[in-house]
Every structure is written in C-alpha cells, then in structure tokens.
Image (cartoon, rainbow, N blue to C red; front, side):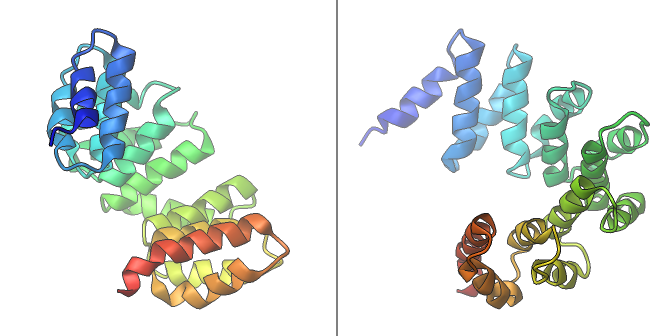
Length: 223
C-alpha cells in the first residue's frame, strides 16, 4: 500500500519555497519515522539557512550531530539562540564544546541562556557548567531557581531525585511546579507516590495536571 502522506511529505522537500521545505523538516522530526533521518541529513545542505537549521534541530533531538555546524552558526543569532542551546544540550556533541565554553563566558548573556550553556557544558563533562547549575539552585532570582530545578531533572544530576522531591513535596515552596517538571525529565519511578499525591490535590490545577502527565510518562519505566 502506498503511503500518500509520506510521499507528499518527501515531495515537499523539493519544493521551491523554503518555508514549505522548512515545515517538511519539522514534520519529519515529529513523525518518529525511522526513514526521516536520511532526509533530514540531506537537508543540512539546503541552500536556505532556516531549512538547514530546522533539519539540524530535529537531528540533534535524535542524537545525530550531522547538523552541529549549522547549530553553532545559529548560536550567534539572537532569535535562534535559545532553541539552539536546547538542541546542543540534548545533543552533547564534543564538536560543540569549545563554542559553548566561549559562549558561556560572554558577559552580556540572558541568565537563562547562560544556564542552558552551562547545561551543555555539564553534559560534555565540563565542571564549570555543573558548578554553575548547582549554585543556581539557591538563586534569589525566581526565574533562575525554577529553571535550575527543571535542568537538574533533565540532566539527571547527582542527588537530583532528593533535591527535586524535597521541593516538590513542600506546599510552601514557590517552585513546586518546576520541581515536578524536573521529576518528569528525571524519569525515576521512586517519585511516583509523590506525583500521585500531587495529581490528586485540588489547590493548584496546573500542578495536578503536570504531575498527572509525569505519571503517564513514567508508566513505560515500570514495565
């Protein structure tokens, strides 16, 4: 049987309009189809930078560093910087280490950009990134502390389970939600009982919703 939707998606990669090719790259990444990696790698040589960038982002989330040089170019574009840092953090390619180190040392960064750069450095074994994120757990800036808690789960930092469960179980801590998001990234079934309790509480609907989704995401880990 011919898969017409897949045929149409692949044909869009040859469209003369870069917007359509870019959307096709995003659709390939979202498809989960194992065939899509081949086409995404082809798009790394597309004449349009944004098409190359979207393909590189999708490849990075697949742990494929074919497009890492495109991402390193995008690191210097303000409107693409945050998305690029997230992808580089997830990718963890040694090819990005020196660029991330230089980026991290820039004095004019947004605090959350610096934290993502630190996360990328931690992923690559650079201690300055790990130390920076540890300090931010006690930041007096709410935005920084909240993001640090989420990153601790995402990076599966040492002692992350204890740190996140302590915050998530404290109804007087303003960062309960961030800690639960961190636990969702951590994917450790030892927090299930706490998540179940939070999903049943009535005081904070968003907290209950995020905890419930984290439980759903943890179900495959129990099998």
